[in-house]
Amino acid sequence: MNKVNLAEKLAMIGGHWTPRIVGELNGQHVNLVKFQGEFVWHDHGDEDELFLVLKGGFRMEFRDRSVELTVGAFLIVPKGVEHRPVAIEEVEGMRFEPAAIQYIGEVDSPMTVRNWERI
Amino acid sequence: MNKVNLAEKLAMIGGHWTPRIVGELNGQHVNLVKFQGEFVWHDHGDEDELFLVLKGGFRMEFRDRSVELTVGAFLIVPKGVEHRPVAIEEVEGMRFEPAAIQYIGEVDSPMTVRNWERI
Image (cartoon, rainbow over all chains, first blue to last red; front, side):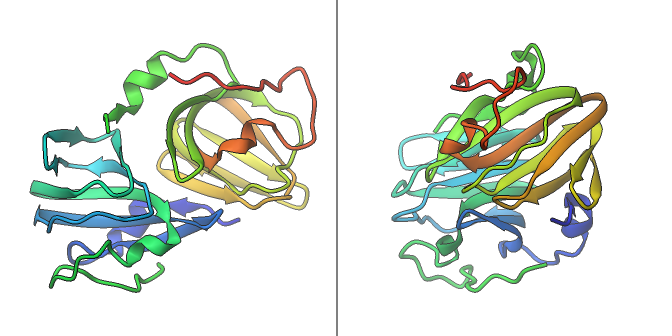
């Protein structure tokens, strides 16, 4: 029951594309991530994923369209839907998702980091 | 897969203490709420609850201590733990919790609203 200050946690995060876990409830994780550039196409077979933008903005690409997200907006990517985040500038964001999601869909790539650290 | 702008949704909310549902994933709801004053003591028997402050600040009281929360901070209240939010000024916040939590613990009070609207 300790409070979590998002700015303090974000200041602890170096590098891109590796979420850090900052909370857990009901089998779900809250994590924070920084990223810039293009990620790989992937999906999460059994997990819906919410992404809330805290800094910057980016384009979430789907196979048939894309959605532009800016600070204070969130998007829920349903399970099984292929997506790829693309960010021109650095983005900071908060995610809600099942604890199992760190094993990222069926994709292996150099950008894929597993067993996320808790901060 | 539509984006949700928090400020737009918050502008649609009148009154206090009644969450509005703005997203659902993995059996969990994302909801937004405005409040001011003291709520009733209550707990949620089977649901952990996350509260993120978007505007203002408040004190979350527990039976043995309290936690002051300000913008950009969140708190997870574990299942079964009695709590009572107390806000001097109006607070806007985002909550993340199981869909079932709108049936608020075991407490009935004039402040308890069930079957929350989706906006």
